[in-house]
Length: 137
Image 1 (cartoon, helix red, strand yellow):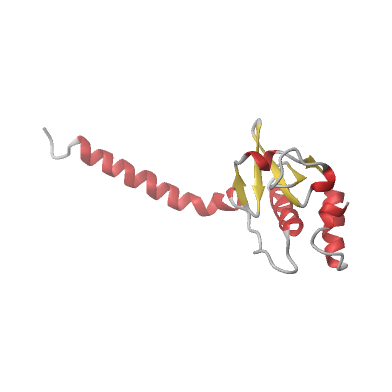
Image 2: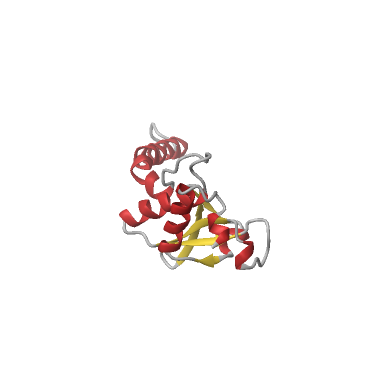
């Protein structure tokens, strides 16, 4: 038996993999976790969704805004009070809400809306129509 045991190689391999992930994460974190401002009186879900949409589009990743109600199953369009993204990831879609991937059932229900619809909701907020502009359209 040599100087090194199999356990030593496992530890070295683990350290190498962990170090590789730590060094690579800053490069990929904007794709995995897009930067979004915190919620405030002037920055609500439609603003955050628009920020994420632009971030993904700038990286060539397809995304579509979804309106829905996270507190209601099978909501009607008029019951929608929130907006988030469905982002293409290969042949799957991943819901993103406030910059984080979401995997609960509610984030995969809702209605696809256009970018123009989202821009109108953001503009309505700027005009002072309130943060529920998404639900009022």
